[in-house]
Structures are given as structure tokens and as C-alpha cells.
Image 1 (cartoon, one colour):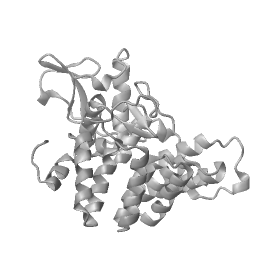
Image 2 (tube, rainbow, N blue to C red):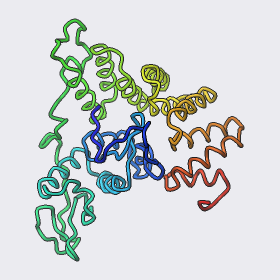
Image 3 (tube, rainbow, N blue to C red):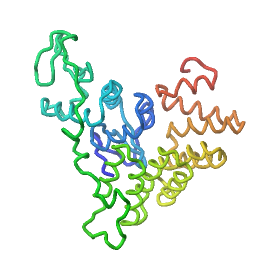
Image 4 (cartoon, one colour):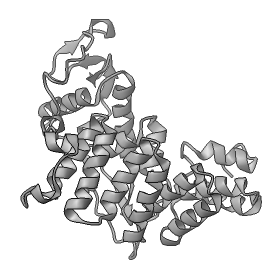
Length: 327
């Protein structure tokens, strides 16, 4: 999957920057109260841009937190993802000189609509002045079929939808990227079972892939097929032992399956490649408490707070440590 960071992504092995106080995908999703899949979608589209990555794991700085909060405000106001896409295209059209228009502090959300604050006045993106909040026309949700998002235009083929493509009939020009686009489209439409089948077809067409197995495992996990997700996360790690996010997710699935010793091994494996992975310290501490190992758990709670004192999970760690403020 193509990544487009807005700063140089440094080699994690040479002069790595500190990741403390940055946010992972999972943390960012928790912070703004949207599904992790939605954050991934916004990252894929280049709306959210990682500031750094370590062994495939993306990190986001405070600028991206601000952007994610604005997007989440639209999402929680009742805007569909395709409706948000339309507003973003309009925003780019009216602010073409701004590389990151969503980071503009003058942008606010009013009645499910992006509005610009100009001094004491409010105006629509096109410049029409709004006298007061009561004068703003409420946005009506159009049928996505009236103006579908770019991805929605690329409907999966009937054969892929039905899962009936004969293996020998797949033409050489049926490129992996086309199947990937179909899988992402199904995900965005909430058709997780069809997305899973398309990811499986990608593996048939192109062979083993850590990324595709991770994507398939993530879909299966969201479908709550934990046994299948477990095996696919295992496969992603087998194909790329340094895939720390796959190790972390494997640990979470094993923990949910009450396979606690195996979960500890998965989390420790992730930390062996990325010792500052705050999410893993948090999850590992919780599992160690379940295993009645409070002394070791405390070490991970404290390390988590050192790395991410402003995390949405920080208060839980402080409660576990019996403290009410950051030491």
C-alpha cells in the first residue's frame, strides 16, 4: 500500500526520532472516537499523513490530530464518508493554494458542513457570507448515487462479487492493484465478507503477501471471526517478522481468545523490534495483570505513560498505577 508522509520518513535503524507523544492509528482512532478502519481510509486517501513510520507502523503528529478531529466532527454530526469526500473536494477547489486546507484553524463544522470563520463572520467555502448560525441552511444528505465518491465509481466486477472467477481465467492484465481497489471499495461500503473474498483472490493471483494477509486479517477481525483473523495475522508475521503492527494485532486477538501466554509472546515479539511501541506496552501490561504478574505489568504501564502521557488510554494506566496525575 502506497504511503505518502508529509515529512521525510527516516530509516528506523539510523538516527530514529523519538516517537514519544506521537499517535499510532489505534490511538488516533480512540482519541477522536471513530473506527480504526476509518482512520486507515483517510490515511490511504492522503487526508491524514504520517509524520514517521517504524517497520510499517505509522505515527501521526498533533497537526494530524487536529485534522482528524475536524473530520471526526463531520462524521459524528451524521455525514457519510462519501459526503465528507465531497466536502473535501470542494474545500480543495476553493483553497487550491493551501497544501493542508483541513489544518486551517479558521475551519469549523456547523450543521454537518465545513464553514470558514473570518473574524466575527462565517462564510461558506465559496465565499457566501453567513450572518449567524441560524441562517445556515441545513445540509441535506444526497443519495451517494447522485454524486458517488471516486472509489465508489469503481464497482467490483460481478465475478469478484460472486466469488466465481475461475483461477485459470484471470487474465495477466488483471493487475493486483485492481483487485486491491475492489477490496477497499467493498470495505468502504461495509461489505466485509466480499472484501475478505477479494483479499483471498489477491493471494491466489499474486502469491503470499504480508500486507494482504494483514488486510485480510483486519477484515476478519472486524467480522469477529477471531479464529480466522488469528491465522492470518500469524501468516503476516511469518512472511515479515518485523511487521510490528501485525504482531500487536495478533497479541490482541490471542488475548481476546484468552490465550494469554501466547499473547504475551506476541507482544514481546513486537517490542523486540520496536521497543517504544506504546500501544503494545499498554496491552501487554493488561495481559500481565490478568496473569497475576503485577510487578512486570507495572513496568509496562509506566513505560506506556512515558511514551504517551496524553494518550486516550493514559488515565487507565494511571488508575492501574494508583496515581491521579502524571509523575
